Image 1 (cartoon, helix red, strand yellow):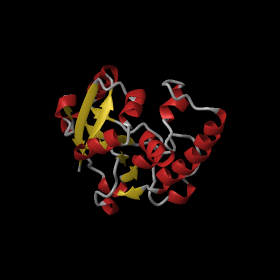
Image 2 (cartoon, one colour):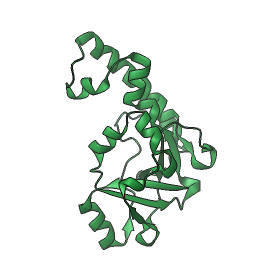
Image 3 (cartoon, one colour):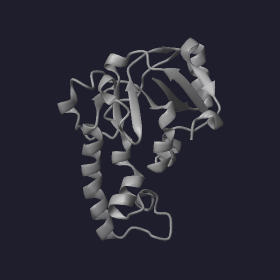
Image 4 (spheres, helix red, strand yellow):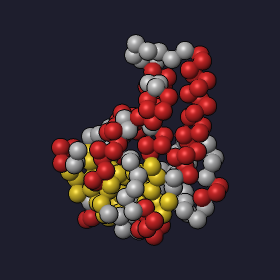
Length: 180
């Protein structure tokens, strides 16, 4: 499987200088301490996070590309193979996405997070959002399965690999080259 990983020019320069893309993201990245039941699947403390090359459209459909923009700069798109498949896991990020809030609750979650748009969220809706956010977070975390069990079934798959990736395996691609 090949994945794409978004980063900044500054980080890409650092990766090239060191010769490696190193895992640096903790799998409990939302700090909810809800991973204790997943010890067989989530075996490391740091991972490289990416999207299967052919599944980026699922991220667009789930309205997750804005979240990508928040966490990365979209300046640099890297493509490389998963080289440690037996310790790599996949989650369905659609389960914790603005698209799910829109489809399941008819709420624009971006209004909640950023206070933007014509439909600002009132106090009652904030309580609903917070309640469902906990449920959706649990669903997202519990969707974590080993790559070898994945089989392509998630709408917005997020690949977590603990691999150390040499730059010789990394191709910098244009944003336009991502299959839409």
